[in-house]
Length: 409
Image 1 (cartoon, rainbow, N blue to C red):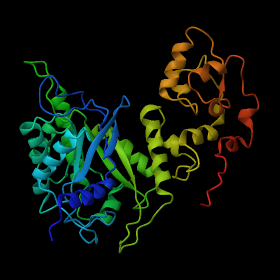
Image 2: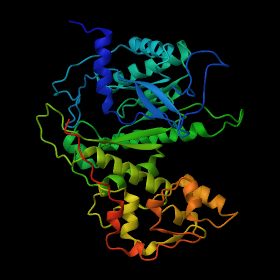
Image 3: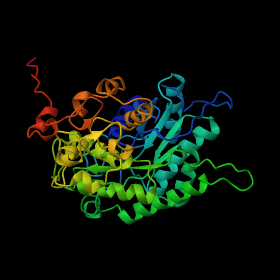
Image 4: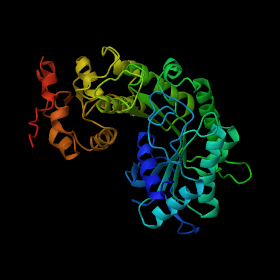
């Protein structure tokens, strides 16, 4: 019996929750007020993504289909999985996107898909959705397409003309892991597709000689998703792989997706618990080497390759390198202040700006929103020095979360 549109929407929106790279950051501001059409990327709008300036953008996040010819062991939608299947036509996805927008539910679309028939056929269907939204209906909202590495380059290039962001999944941290758990996918082919996309993005970003205008091609750049916990790779390996991806392909973001056991899995895969806490720590470590000047080796040194699940990696590093502290908030350079637990990039910039006018005291830091409990052991300020606090053998316990009584009801 053919499923209704509502039934298929329930199946394919639920199946899309495993795509972690649902992000709208990095696109240009664009709306339909001046130029006509529908949608915008500026509204503060059933997936919620966040732009760099904090705006929340609601996206319709669905799969074109959860049928798939591949049999990746970690994927709920693999060909051997006993899950309920469904499929949309491109016209139905276009209609759903427009109707959800008109009802003020969404500001954009995140579209992924299982592989049906062939990579080219599937990619062609997804491109068709984006093309019709843009050219036929004048949709100017956000569009993120999950690209297929083995698809023809001209299809991925056409996708870039209509999408704000494209993502090509690296799948697993190591080639050996991909060979073991996703043997039908080729790591070299994935990296080649990512490299080709980077070159096209950079070429489009160069202004033309005649008009001095840049071409519109994937303004939000490309991202990737990495499954963590399925192949046994440790955190040091994962972070080093991510660092190489950022450097080689100019990625806007690597998304970590914690592997959880698939209910009907016939093959046993290793699981490192708790997966969501580990995923969170990886994001924190990723942030440290992208924006705080840490090296991957620094973050993972002395950890046995695994991040501490009980505390954030910046605090763990500080406790392991107490000789680097205390840092004087009135004299230390920006790079050094960024290493103080509890100080973020915006706070450090505020400190640098404020200390031009006066020497900062602890109460001044509190007014800047700094948690004094987190920083007092690692800093010196006017009228404050940690003295023996930083040398306490039980310093770690001061930052431990207090035990909580679980509800019995």
